Amino acid sequence: MNEVLLSVDSSTSAGSVAICRGETLLGEISLNVKKTHTDLILQNIDRLLADLDLHLNEVDAFAAVIGPGAFTGLRVGVSTIKGLAMATGRPLLGVSSLRALAMQVPFSDRPVCALLDARKKEVYTGLYRWKKGGLQSLGEEAVLPPEKLLEALQGEVLFVGEGAVVYRSLIETKLGSRAAFAPWSCNTPRAASVAALALADLRQGRTVALEHFVPTYIRLSEAEIMWAQRDAEAAIEG
Image 1 (cartoon, rainbow, N blue to C red):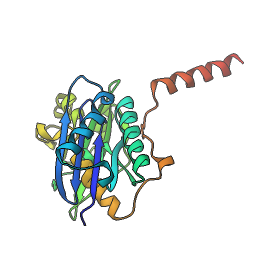
Image 2 (image 1 turned 60 degrees about the vertical axis):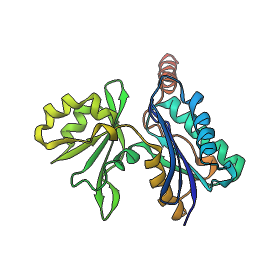
Image 3 (image 1 turned 180 degrees about the horizontal axis):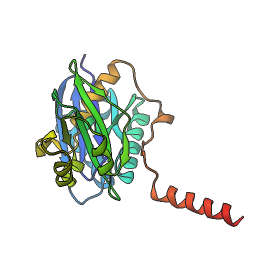
């Protein structure tokens, strides 16, 4: 099958857009710059379509990372892809940022621990294992202090993602020779990895309805935390 799929990853400061036709990657743009995703995503989509001589109506499905990751980046990416799907009537697919990161170190003989820096001395994390050519989840994705994560890990582990870079010294101190690290080129999220996961879901009919296509944050936003604190204070005063 030769479905044309457009995918976006905006879960970190490094934005990425890709277009594939079936299992062939036609083009990808990845930038890690100070400009916001709002400035770059549509611009890069337009550029990629033009360079490939494709029209938006020739895209058969749209995919985006839905989380976890940077709140603003996820909202921009999800909203953009949702708008394109609405305009064309094409199906939507949502992909985990952590699962997409783990896709970048295929066929590891160790469990793969994908890490994104969640700030506030925490990480977003997911643990996976390659089995029969596919990526198997070994637990729920979570946000927690890296020390707590490392205490729970058993055996040898391969780490990938910007969180592995930020906390490499801590990981090496806690796990020693049990820890291995993916090459630096694998640590930046790529829309091509999103496309690989989304294409498999598309062929199995696992699309997402427009009304359910929303970011998955795992952790509450600052605004939600503030509102919860205000509600708690009001309840105490009342």
